[in-house]
Amino acid sequence: MTSTGTAAPDPLPPVARERMPSFSLSSVARRWGPGARSASAFAIPASVLAATGHANAVLFVLFGAFAVLYGDGRAYRVRGWVVLVAGLALMAAIGLGGVIGSARAGLDAGTVAIEIAVLVTIAMIGTYVVNAGRLGPPGPLFFTLTCAGGLVAGGAGVDVRELVSYTAFGVGGSMLVSMAGILIDRRKPERLAVAAASAAVDAYLAARADGPDTAAGRHAAGEIISHAWAVLYDAGISERAPDSPLVTELLDAHRRLNDAGPLDPGEDPRLVPLARPSLRYRLRRSLTPNAHALVTTLRVGFACAVAGVVGWLLWSPHPHWAILTALIVLQLGPDRVRGRIRAEHRMAGTIVGSGLFALIYHLSPSGYPLIAIVAVLLFGIEVFIPSNYALAAVFITPVALLAGLGGATDQAIGALVGDRVLETVVGVVVAVLVLRLLLPHAYRRTFLWTETRVRAAIETLVEHLRTEPVDRTMELRRDLQFELTGAMRGGVDAAHDDAAWTRAHWPGHAALILHGYRLLSACWAVPQGERMADPEHWIEWKRLG
Image (tube, rainbow, N blue to C red):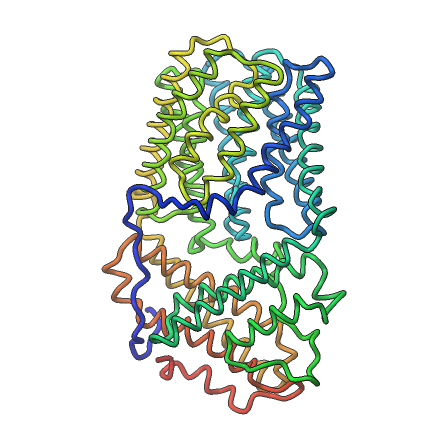
C-alpha cells in the first residue's frame, strides 16, 4: 500500500504536453562557455594533426574530444580526473570496436550478432551507472557511439593502434580545454552553483509566501542545494576552508530553506551538510527490479538489441545507427510522455540534420575547413541541447554520421542519408514501443519503493536522534535527502505515465516527502550539541498531513 495520512493540499506534478521544445535566447547565452569548450577540444588537437600532415585522421580526434562533455560544471579539483576517466573509457571503447571491426567478415549473422551484443552491453553498463549514480547528461551515448565508430573504422582497415592514438590526442585536447579556465577564475563552478542554490531558495520562499508548501517546490530547491554542496565538496572548500564566503553563503541559503534562522556566531561552521552518498552506495542501492535505474537499463538493453536486429534485417550496412537512436531516446530513463516528445524531436532533427550532412558530404571538405565545420556543429550541440533538443539534433546528426562512418566514405550520399533516416525511424519506433510495452507498470513499483526507502531513512535517522546530538547525524540526514529526491522523481515519472493512478496515490506520497523535509528542517532548528526533544513524533505516520 502507499503511504497513509491526511491528504495534503499538494497539486499533482504537472505533466509535460508540449510537442515542440521551448526556446529562449537567455538559455542559449548561458551555454556559450560549454559550446566553446566542446568546439575547442576538437579543433585544437585536430588542427595540430592537420598542420603535421595527418589531415586524413582529424575525424578520429572527435572520439576523444567527447570527453570534454563529462567535465562540464564540475569543480576544477575533480574536473580533470573526470575528463581523464571518461577519455580512458572512450579509448577503450574505440579500441574494442576497432579490434572487433578488423576481424569482421561482412554482414553475416555471426558478425552482426557480436557487434550488436557489444554495443548493447556498453549501452546497458553506461545507462545503469549514469542513472543509478544520478550523474545526468551527457549519458552513455558517446561511449557507444565511439565503439560503433571503431567497428566501422576497423572494418575499413584502419589500424587499431592509430584509432586509439588519435582518440588519445582528442582526450588530451579535452583535458587542456577543460582545465584552461582555472587560469582565469578557479572558483567559477563553485560560485555558479552557490548562486543557483541561493536563487532557488529565494524562488521557493517567494512561492511559499503566496501559497501552500508543496512537495514539488521543496524538492526543486532542495535538489539544487544538494548539488551545490556536492560542488563545494568536490572543490575541497568544505573541508579545507569551512569559513569560506561560499560555504557561508550556501549555509545561509540552506538554513533559510529550512527556516532555521541565521548561523549563530558561536556555531561551528564546519558542521555543514554532507555531499551525495558515495558512488558505490548509489550503484548498490539501485540493484533491485523496483529501481528506476535498473528498469531503464533493461529497457535500453532490449530496445537497442531489437533496433539493431531490425536494422540488420532491413539490410542496412549501419544497423548501429538504430541502436544509437534507441539509446539516445531512453538513456536517461524518460517516462512515456517525455520519451515520446524526445523521440519526435529526434526524428524531426534527424531529417533536417541529414540534409545538412548531405551538403557537407557533397562539399567533401578536408583539413582545416572540415575542422571548422565540425567545431561549429559541436558548438551548436552544446548551445541548444538544454532548451531545444530538436534543433540540437540537427547538429548532432551530421556529427554522429561523420563519427559513425569511422572514416569509411565509399557509400553513395543518397544511400547514406536514406539509411540514416530509416535507422532513425526504427530506433525511434522501437524506443517508444518499449516505453509502453516493456515493464508497463514499473513506475508504480518505483513509486512505492521510493516511499519504502524514505520511511526507512526516516526511521533510521529517528533511531539515532533518540540518543545522539543532532549534529552527529549529518550522514543520515544526507541519505534522507537523497531518498526524498528519488521519491519526488518517482512521483513525477508516475504522473506522466499514468496521471489517474498517481492522482489517487499522490496525497500520501506528497505528504511523506514533505514530512521528510520537515524532519530535516527540525534537525536544523536544534542547537549544536543538543538532542531533539521529541524524535518519536517523526515516526507517527498518522501525523504526516
